[in-house]
Image (cartoon, rainbow, N blue to C red; front, side, top):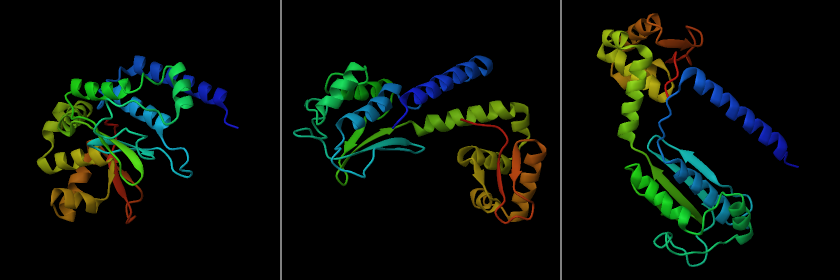
Length: 233
């Protein structure tokens, strides 16, 4: 049996910890998507999925440029991807009613309409609904250009402008790549920079001395990787 009380205690503990961390370190939270849009997308998947399709699950995939929510089963009854903001129908009315009483579900279609309006307010592309292979997929696209700019600004802030200015273009390219992919081998960095093994090795040595990059694994380990010493979000 699922222990909802234990889950609730864990949730409250995590929220308390997050609150304390925020007050101590003043984290800057810059959402890539409107909170209502992705949350409503997940709630709708739980509410309207086809539960007769045993063994299939609701899936959420996060990519650099988009978030995808995949729900088992086609759209119910007369609802189509073209009229989804206007046509009202619930495949699972009991689940919808319970979630409505808990405040998770809006009036039918009102939530979908707000997904569209909130994405517009964030200057993002319209959400895209489709029905691939007996499922419903919602795609929310972020602004990849702004994401890269935020990553770049945060990276320089953590490294320090004075240190960043001392790096050459190859070193900056290595740092930017590691901030994006979190971890990479020397061969990966050779491909990224277009430089030779000896050049990349020297650049990594400089970055390690600056305290920007760290080596993961033994020196002679062929699977050795490199990563940034600080967290960039």
